[in-house]
Length: 197
Image (cartoon, rainbow, N blue to C red; front, side, top):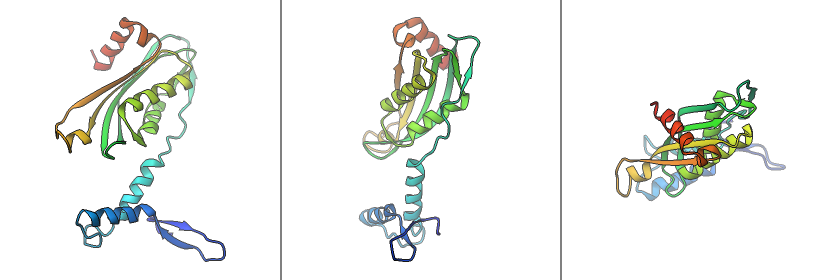
């Protein structure tokens, strides 16, 4: 089977390779903007485009809920500078986001790599930054059973950089729960740690 194609089996008919429907969409898009999808340089673009969309939307984060016993509950755990790419659902343009995820451990600690896996799981879909950070926070709360969770995301959105105002800027979104929402000193401590102060 060719990597660029999906294998379709119909009853009574021999197996045949059928192009991914996304290839047809890519060819139509190229034609619509005045390009020749059969010219050198673009000939394989529809297949690459289709593969990329399938890879992006079918992301498998693997195991995200590995927990370890802790001897010191209540400790603040902060994981900073997790980088993810997502797609703005309004313009289908990418945005990159740097995330800080924090929680006060209850009885168990979440495996360190799981923070990035959870973040990527939420980023690999059409998204808005506010929903990205709140979804990550909800998963961390659900998995760890810790009520004190915070997620801070700073993102650069190509829908702002490449179109419209065409200006680079960072957008910050937060999702604070438990002590981080209720206690300004806990929130200040977290923000200082997130800035590396």
